[in-house]
Structure formats: C-alpha cells, structure tokens
Image (cartoon, rainbow, N blue to C red; front, side, top):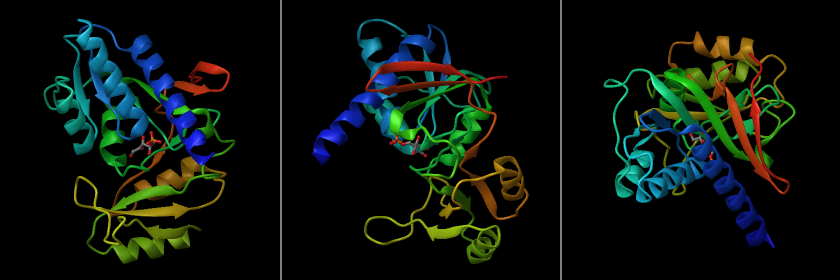
Length: 237
Ligand SMILES: O=C(CO)[C@H](O)[C@H](O)COP(=O)(O)O
C-alpha cells in the first residue's frame, strides 16, 4: 500500500518534470538544474532528449554537487553562473507550494544555491506532485534556514524568538547535516505563515543566516502532476 503511494508520487514527479522539460527547454538555452528527486527527473528528461539528438547545445548550471554529479553521469553539459550570469530558465522542485506560487524549498539542503540560480533566471519553473500544494506556506513543511556554523546557537535562539520550533538538521547517522557550502541547516516549524514577506525580511537581515527556503515572488510557472494529469499554472505578475 505504502509502496503504491510512493510509486504514484514518483510517477507524478516524473510526469511534471518531463512536461516541463518539453515545454520550457529550448535549443541554445542556458538552464538552471534544480536539486531533489523531482529535479533529478528533469536532468534525466534532458539527457533522454539529448540521446534523441535534441537540445544538444543546452548548457546547465547545477544547483548542488548532487545534481552536478548526476548531470555528469548522464553526460549533460554543464556551465557556471560565472560564465553565464543570466539563465533563460530554471526548473526545480519544491517542498510546499502556495496558491500564489510562493514556495518553500530546501528539503534537500540546496536552498542557497537554488535561490542564487533562481534569482539569475528569467523564468523559474517549479515541478511538483500534487501533494506539494498547500493553502498557506508553513502548513506542511518547516522553513529551512541555512546558518554559518559560527555562533549557530544564537541563530537558533533568534529563530525561536520569531516563533519557530527549531530542529537542527542531521544525517541518518545522527551527525550534523552540512550544506555544499559547509553550513548548517535549522528546520524552523512556524505553522501556517501569515506574513511570509515580513518573515523573509527578518531572516534576510540577520547576520549569520546565509539563506532560507522562502522563495517569494521568484517562481513564474508551476507544472504540477496528479491523478487528473499535468497542469501548468502561471504566477500573476
Ligand atoms: O528544495 C529542494 C532541495 O533543496 C527540493 O527541490 C525539494 O526538497 C523537493 O524535493 P523532491 O523533489 O525530492 O520532493
């Protein structure tokens, strides 16, 4: 039963990813490649197109070391933001998607590079299975906050004072999780967030906080898959 649900979720993720690659990746583009299981389907779909002789001149900027490794394994050509500071489009996953297409990201710990790449992109497409949809950010998912190891307990107190239940992220073996930059992640359960813009501003202004998973006003498109098929939604500008 649980396996069935997991298989269904994986199928929706794949369907959303494949539909987005077909719709948004075009010849000659410089594209951001997201992180996570849904974004991995994007890299696989791009590799599959290349095997058919399509999108051969598309160059990707990976948002994590894991995505870089997958792209290299599948022979997807990569570039850097330094070589291409403006990207045509990024396709990435998300943990929670609110109706106005604000999202929480960072379940895979790549939130900082994901935001840097998203902010460098003309178009930001989120691919998701239907279970990621939420009435309000924070309802189902904590906000990951990336902090410097230096003084991190002060950041924990700051985040608790903002109303969060804070869980330092750890690996399966119990050791602390470190991001690709060597930082820590504090998962901050706020519950449904009434004012995400002001919360993001508080987080942005705190020294020692180097990133957070609130992506507000960044996403242009959502491709979501579920039992009734694949749907494309556009953010209101
Ligand atoms: O933000 C992310 C990684 O930092 C992922 O996109 C997010 O966690 C969704 O992951 P998945 O596609 O595996 O459900």
